Image (cartoon, rainbow, N blue to C red):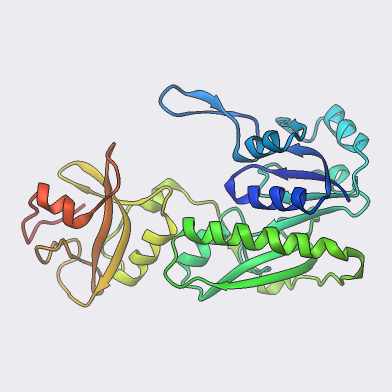
Length: 301
């Protein structure tokens, strides 16, 4: 098939690669424009742009798809299909309708649950036992289109980073399989009454509130790893927690209970396993404690 691929982050890369390896013709790749990053704030291409350039595919990164000239260029590609994976721009109706088979989206949840920007993180925060990938025929609403194919995977104790990587690979495999006989598949409408919304993660959510139950805080640690990172303050310094265990101890919320840095929560306690101090590499808590004494009874903010 003649395919336009539209995606930006690492999550989208396996699907682009898999489509190319399956001998589909990728006529163009649309992605977000290069952004300043790093200490030098140099413009950096998106992961999808880097992969497209490696594959020798034309890359386009318009600031918007509402421009008439941009739309004309899109239509001129005469694609059979557009495949979209975490692109980051709203697709106007003229774009949705342009390819012969419309636009298919690789979405990181089992729709209609967790429509929106942060389905992986919200599923972890909610304590969902499973999540997955839905291949969806895109419509004008927010992730409201008919479902074409799904695949599930257990969440278990995975971080958002680990789960996103797994879902990216599952999505790539599912998309390639879906396109083998696309016209024979029967899209299923979503039940809007079952829909839940996965709002974008705000940085303010990542500050740890030890009055919450330890079980919830442990899910926050996983949902916010690797970014933005659940954090608390210690002696005026921000400390991120990248891994933690729930411990059956109790005390006043935010109080250090033992020499292993177990922190009392609203219910039970949380023991950080891997942490990161501001501007420092990630390290085991055990190594951190060898260099910094935190007395029992210390109260964290």
